[in-house]
Length: 179
Image (cartoon, rainbow, N blue to C red):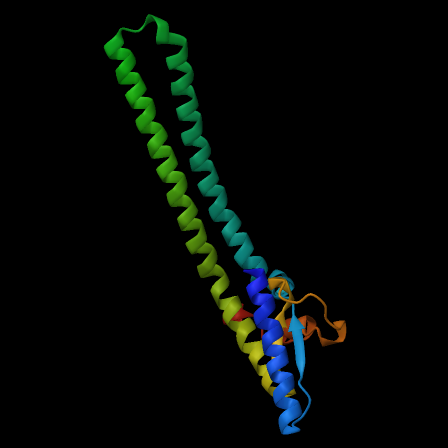
């Protein structure tokens, strides 16, 4: 995938340069941002992370409680296994297997819920970041603004980094949703 992105990036750069040369238009203007740095420092990011952490604490506690229940059931079974009648042993094994399945299903469900929550919390910040980047691109006449966090850039002039400007404007605007 990275090779594909790198190839696409190179192709876009070459295509843009070719257009500038052929049409004798203004030189190709390219800049980049580091979206990861923006997301870490953007207005509302700390609050979104704190809310996500609170939700993860609740999820982790539930998983831990279910794990303790499962472990104690397995331990008790292992201690009593040799003294149990075959039908009781089978019933306990079935009970343990069912609890293991419920545990795994709940872990999977919580993972999906966590991802949905993370997306919901970060979406306003991503939208503001995209709007801000587009505004800078249009105002300052950049043809392309790449994202260094995607690792599509292998080398770049650091004077083209607009990460600080994006953050400054987002902070000046008061964050996502006024936050």
